[in-house]
Length: 330
Ligand SMILES: NC(=O)c1ccc[n+]([C@@H]2O[C@H](COP(=O)([O-])OP(=O)(O)OC[C@H]3O[C@@H](n4cnc5c(N)ncnc54)[C@H](OP(=O)(O)O)[C@@H]3O)[C@@H](O)[C@H]2O)c1
Image 1 (cartoon, rainbow, N blue to C red):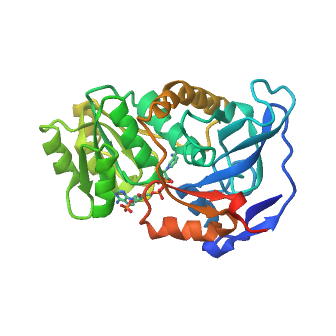
Image 2: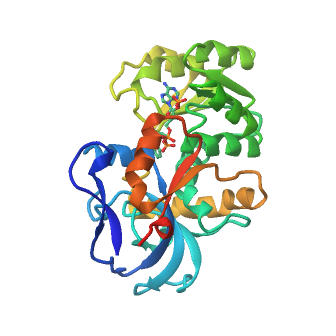
């Protein structure tokens, strides 16, 4: 098969399409013929050598895909060759074929095409596990989503609304702020020229956000805690603004607030299986009902993975960028 290999740490040009051995599904795994794979911020870090694949994961980038099941390993029940699916991967999505634990495979949600479904698993599992399972967002609460126009953010805004929360978000351009409002954000704050703490304070009558989904980390930690409501929950899932910062425990204590930080990729298989099950049960019906939709900026040939990375690095995209092997001229 062909896959995108990383020839060494560096810029987008280190992503090279090459012939590689076909993966073989082990016990409990299925082999998927990839229709499309999602490009994630984490793939940029992996390419730069800053986020190596976990032990046992394929060396090629790609944390999610859609496609047809080609074969099932020993002990797999519930999936058959030919089934159209999407899947959460630990790596290897930038390829024509990938092997994945059967417990990380999902059916296509109603109304979503085979190709578009590649935009869902990583954002769905990340947002559901953090905003719903961990932070316990409730109807009527306020959710603040940083980077509302990102792959993660576009799903989080829609999910927050679908769950009956009021949703605030941040983004860095007028076009992105407009798209976030169209997706259901009640408040969209330009982080470049507005203070999100003041804006969220005003929006909530001085109370603050009950749940914050943060992708910036250290640079936003103090202001995130300031923006939290009493009993608020801050969940850090990205460190684009650094990993080290001081916490004012007094501020947390007075608000009875909590700070969490999680990474999906590094979770043990059992936790991923549980998250996938929760997503299928809780989020798939919302997608089937049209209340949450995949947001896709562009679909590029697999061979153009370097261009996809340039697109993400340019930062003008809204939602997801996908790679499709069948768009590659042979
Ligand atoms: N922990 C986990 O399990 C997990 C899983 C998936 C993703 N993530 C993280 O989630 C983040 C989004 O991932 P993605 O793949 O969806 O990325 P993406 O589509 O490339 O989006 C990155 C976003 O960051 C925003 N951004 C940059 N600086 C910002 C700032 N100061 N304030 C607010 N937003 C800012 C950008 O918005 P502007 O262009 O408007 O600046 C852009 O929308 C990444 O940090 C990624 O590592 C974590």
